Image 1: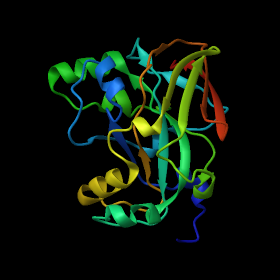
Image 2: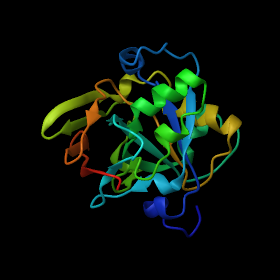
Image 3: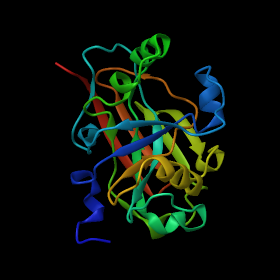
Length: 219
């Protein structure tokens, strides 16, 4: 590990690699086939926001959805990382939201276009404080939950993931070399839904960490 502060990875990490449809029930709720290999897309580091800053509905979207996810922070880079040693490359975790302009995503899919406009806009990746690896000894068995205006919308376990964290690290690093400070978003459980201007999102991992974000509209 380098002298850079991994607990502030969002300030210098170079990429956000996202896994789509990694929970079967979520794939089904959006009428997608359950994948037989990971579905990958990217967000730029400019998508990061922290508590205290608002989530902005893009000016071109009228249907912004929340997706709560466990983020895996890479502490040691590598290429073609073996599953057996994959967890040695993990520095810790972070609670994330993959904010998705669902109307734009559907439009992109219908045209055969990439999802960039739907997934990579500014404020599309709200994150919590860094969670040291020791605080989540079994990332494959924790509960993610999300409330909108105090009403529970998402509540699911990472045990429902189709592809495990070691599998994802191996698969991704065979294609895209992983670097220190990279973030992997591991997918969202079912229950995604639309948010509106002035909504408040409360998000958590069990009783380990919580975060709160307000929704505003891009002016």
